[in-house]
Amino acid sequence: MNAMPLHVMIAIVGMSGGLSMLLGWLLLRLTLTRRLKKELKPKGEYWETGTLDFGFLNAGLFAWAIVLPWVQRSVKFRLIYPHLNVKARANGFEKMMAYGTIGGLFVFLFFGVIFVLIEP
Image 1: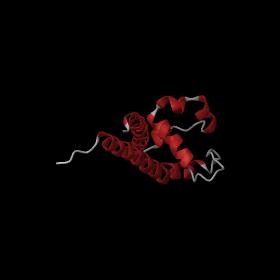
Image 2: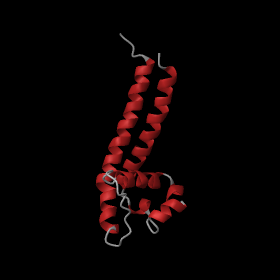
Image 3: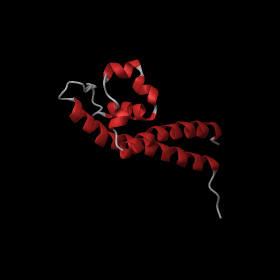
Image 4: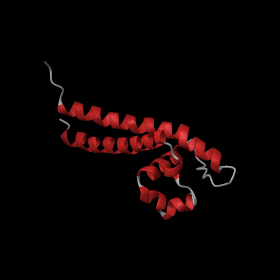
């Protein structure tokens, strides 16, 4: 039986974290960001990034606001969205995708550093 080398296993785990991050980010963009844009745009409270990111910057910002409570209370977030409670407006699926996005990013970065350190 052939054993898988350690650096290959670490690379696979790191890439699966990256895929989790990308999938969660895409699903947040298609669900939460789209719904909040429809709710906030008529009131003039939606922040248009003005770039070609198609709303992914807002999806990432919303993911950080759901996972880390101090992001939503920060001064810079309050300047962009003064009266928005993202965590209260997100349903269970969107919260799960936000945790998957941020958790996948951490797994990707952690195992990426380990891969670079132990690569043969």
